[in-house]
Length: 89
Image 1 (cartoon, rainbow, N blue to C red):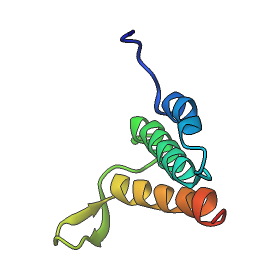
Image 2: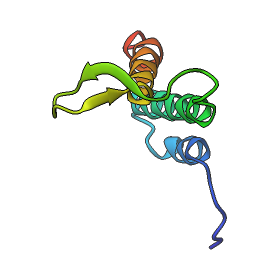
Image 3: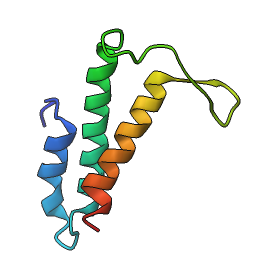
């Protein structure tokens, strides 16, 4: 047994054959979430350059000021889930 690191995509690809009855919907969902996280991470790393720092001007359900980065991440995840997963179902 090796202690080799594996990406989420590699893990899904390597293990999906163990479930021949599955049609890949969970894999599509996980991959959409993975892609949204990568895109959000990329944009947050350059947040000052793309104007996603500070308050967004809204209040969340806990009564806190919403941050632009939170709004950006939410919109990104929503778009990718509907594009990649929900249109396929």
